[in-house]
Length: 497
Image (cartoon, rainbow, N blue to C red):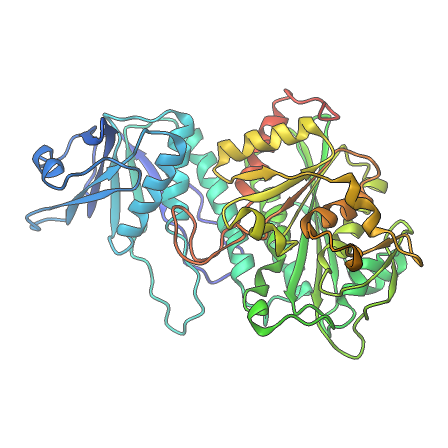
């Protein structure tokens, strides 16, 4: 198996996962238990009798439930863990894998005995994702605590292809987390462009600097970035695996967001290193698509800028000329993500002739108010595309919820001096800020099939939960890769109908 990919970041490498026919010597052996009529049923073999222990512990076999069996300690084996797998669904197995990874982080090795409870392909992939993503860590401590767990062996499965696919996907998600978790002191737009080149080193990556952006008319990206001493960038990379559909993924890449002159309160800035989570997701998705050699053509665009207040910053009341010529009156400089996205979406429609455009952005504070921290909001002008993404969300374990594009709200974006305003007219008091943001972006799609994923809720986690770890989650990588995997099979038509 190739070494773990973590680009140039100092994060701890993920464990290596292998397959075996019999239980090897390991520090910890895990045996699945499942939920049966409100109790736990042992589904594997252990070196000790565990049935009575399950009864005494009143174990229910729920996903991620752990019961430890002490061992004599005269060999490598430290303990046996019984891990609940619930009903054995991919979601349950993902939880079980993550729970095991956290419990065994200080062990030298882990073997998971699946011989009596071999999951199907989807379940096995989910288990591997949980094991690897639950192992993720990122630190800037002077002496970070190294995780001891280096090897994980799955006993019973024989399908190496499933293992490799799941590992590639977990590595790509970890790379997205690294990008998000990197402090903004380091993470300038130029740094992000360099990181993209590292991550996509076998693909052709082009970067437009501030002079090229000005010459080509990317007024939205330039306007947002003009207040910073660290100028903006547009990052573009393409993987061409064939197929008849050209998908363009557009990511919001605000490397730090103060709100500009419409300054956020201090508390509102604490997590703003994550405001490039959309860019991280689309770049890492391209990494996964290339590793999986999917038969589809995908371009990733990351619109990167730092939104800072200064004497050169854009002002409320300024009028920008976006890529393609449309003008936008800026009423709030903290509604900056839609300005950089609009440039990239217009470029995808006009110049790249995209068949489908999907943008991913930590766009609005209104979205987690509506849906909480686990679901992303889905806005789209195409019902078939909505169904495809919803199915991919179910398969990948990255949930989303379709939101309406309310046509009655569209007039709120009209401006008396420009083609559009960047926020809904405040005097109308419509609320629905996520909806008006999506309606604004739709104006730049050229009528092409398009979806907008507002990931402001699930892009960051406040603590460890299931396969998510505190900090950046890499949300969107697994969802988009699942969707593109289906697209690459040829079962989807060119125009997503």
